[in-house]
Image (cartoon, rainbow, N blue to C red; front, side, top):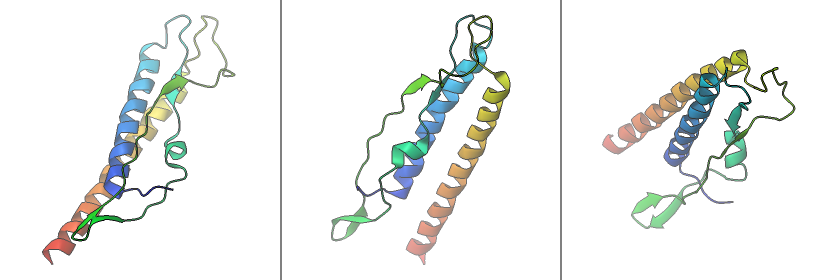
Amino acid sequence: MQAVNLFELAARQAQWLAVRQSAISGNIANANTPGFRAMDVEPFENLVAGKQVVMASTHPSHLGAGTSQASFGVKEVDPKTPILPSGNSVELEQEMIKAGEIRRQFELNTGVVKAFHRMLMMASTG
């Protein structure tokens, strides 16, 4: 297992959320396009599985962490989903629910980063 920096993890999740938001908005934009197949990204939990959150020292007077490289590939949603007569697999209700989830996850991510930033600032300034 490799170490994960909490700020790096939050930044990685923000990148993942941006990619997912783009995929979902593309689904909504193509809801009436014949033959369009709904797209989504792999769940974030799958991307960070097997990593542990620990601090690693890179220099005796500095704290740092290992870096993790993850790619967020957009893939077709489960091919078993119902297909409309036009050959389209986008369900607007589901896509709107996903868009709301993404917004809530962005807000949570931002709140966590702000809290850790405040904590570090208080610890460093006394």
